[in-house]
Amino acid sequence: MHKIDLKKYEIRTDMAIDLAEKNKETFNPETMEENGVKTSWLTLDDNNPIGKKAGTYLTIEFDDVTDDDAKKNVSNIFSRELSKMLGLVGFNHAVKTLVVGLGNERSTPDALGPLVSNKIIVTKHFFDMKVNVDEKFSNVSAIYPGVTGTTGIETSDLITGIVKETKPDLVIVVDALASSSISRVNRSVQVSNTGIYPGSGIGNRRKEISKDTLGVPVVAIGVPTVVDAAVIVCDTINYMSKNYAYNKMVKDKKSSKLITKPINYLNKEVTASKEDKKTLLGLVGTLSEEELINLTYEVLTPIGYNLMVTPKEVDFMMEKLSDVISYGINHCLHNI
Image (cartoon, rainbow, N blue to C red):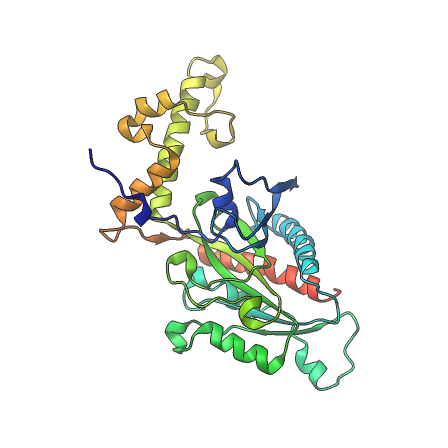
């Protein structure tokens, strides 16, 4: 039988929670759910087995930010949790902050950083001019440096130069991320105090932007906007198994005959057994989740079909998500 070399293929994700879920025996994030929004705090040390940089990771997950009430709810929770993260790196009202919007404004799934940067309330120029600034405002500047492909300059080098010249006490970077879970695309925010490697989620890893390289604390904020095609295939296979198990469970129930619209079986307490998976999918159904996703990578990657995929409504979502993130940053940095 053909043996799969699993070492050649790895799941591309920037989300610590994705990797932690695959190592549930090792990690137990501190989680809380409030008004349909789930927050998870995860602390990693230098010897963590998932390969993420040591530090604190916050993940906020939600179903929707497209209507005003939902967006306001998520914005308030994000602002509160971001304030906690900023507290961990020593933020106070006297701190000078530089907000950096990473990404390419010409590519919609990668435009989150520039969109957020444009919505930040900047005040540094007032402080520099010795203008009498209202005490509720702190010293904030914002930039979006573009990407190496359009500037020809390494993004981290640009930011390093700006930090040396303007001397902020804190840098907040905002970027689009990649996830290994369909359910988190455009429906989650990750915040960490570890910095960031721009482009790492899509296999184009650039120089690190962190306290180690800039000399000041760096808080990274990101939203997963893309996912590998291989992940979609694997999630679909898993959904097929759960759908099969759900239909098998309810097929003889009289109440199920009265249902006239599709049921979201993912919200039901049902798990597909190994026998169910094998019956439905044959040999593929006997594979573990890790084996399944690595097999899919091996099939799609050599032929160039492991595309990075984003939802069709991504332009609309970027506007809403940039509102959420800019709201949180503005309210944390300024007393407004």
